[in-house]
Length: 117
Picture 1 (cartoon, rainbow, N blue to C red):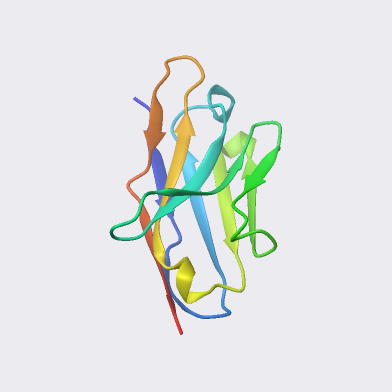
Picture 2: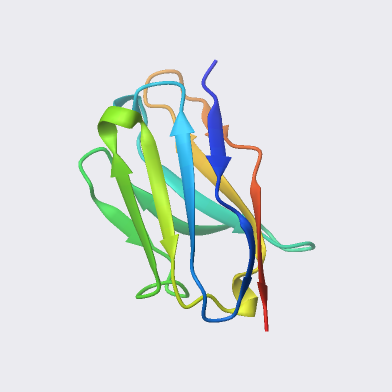
């Protein structure tokens, strides 16, 4: 059973920065990608950013230019550097990793990011 362990959430003022990390118990090469989604109460979970083992990245338009996703394959870990945070970035951020071989779509437990104005 693959586990995704997140860390790095917290409270920050608008304009500040946070870095989230997510470490998988399995090999990063076993996933289609690893990435981050976020969710606020009453809304659907939305894509923030993804990265493949080949370092191909994808971003939501709302975070482009402010957030950077990166990974260290040897550590099976992905990072989300969030700069110039805005109150609308407040959400629970979830790590996500769809498995190539068993078809399972794994999620972390989530980490809360709160941006105060």
